[in-house]
Length: 138
Image (cartoon, rainbow, N blue to C red; front, side, top):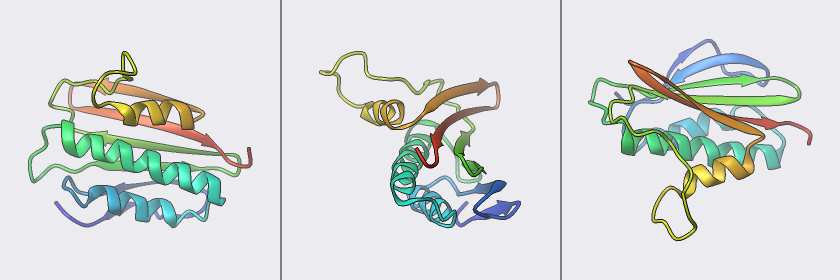
């Protein structure tokens, strides 16, 4: 699947979900969604980086097939942004932080931990959802 499919409408405040496909273009499509929110520049920069990281992880690790899609769910309030990235999660891999600074790979989740005001993973039999929150006006 390629392209965007929106449930709800992107707006500076409120909630909506967008299917961003499941291919190498998915991170760029997800970033375009975040750019529509009109966030303050430092918050937007962090949101773009973290969204791109989570969507990239889905593309690389979720063992998706062409008919699958990554769902980007955005909740924007005047004081807080929450972005959740959901994929079929077939690989059984759980997003994790590096155990040591010498480990290879996994640096993206360290960025999520350091730049966000909170993050987590929700695993269900049919999907994995990784989310982060950013304060707006911090």
